[in-house]
Length: 257
Ligand code: PGA
Image 1: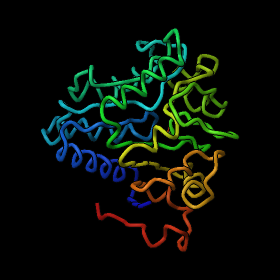
Image 2: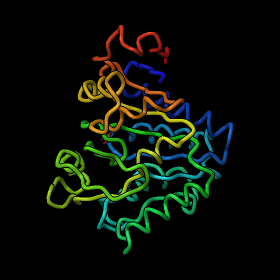
Image 3: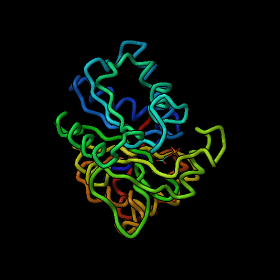
Image 4: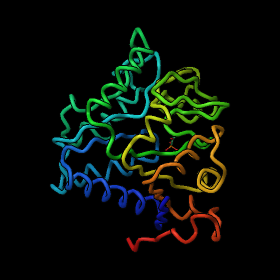
């Protein structure tokens, strides 16, 4: 794992935007897998700006999203499709047929999960997987528990995760769906390359446990330690609890940007 510590959340977002721009410049038909949440909003703003300035082109890119709520349609204001439209897709001119999200209203959810796995395989697999990390260590909606599913699957959300998503539902916790569909840890770990972005004090404790602690289903992000090409991009606050002499100490880099 490589760990890059940036000055602040803006600098961390800018760095990840540069990584994506470079990957797209090398391969315009890049297959990206994308997260939602508060953290990537600044990153998506950066990408939007880069597209407007002609520095990045998504015209041939393919995207998948990690997860989607069960029981609400794509057009629902709280759906992750709506989030992606608002923060990225409508602003970067990506053909929608190349953007893939799970359908949380599919009649057969197991079949929908299988369809999604086939679509990823059909695209040749994910080249670059972007991730956030939940306060409880989830990635996608792979919540902590006694076991983890490898493939795309249906998941019951923890109350902490539902609270974290309440803003998408007008702050009304009762409106937040109780279940979601999510790529599994196997789906995520099959990506060629992974970048995890985490910012802010609130993430410092879970970042340390995920990067320096044991690999455990009780902290799904810890499985990233098993992947051969992961970069963790942090701001100083999120990195503040990493042990200087820890397993990643010597590999921490600080870009000047
Ligand atoms: P956040 O969510 O960016 O809103 O903190 C991250 C996540 O739950 O994956």
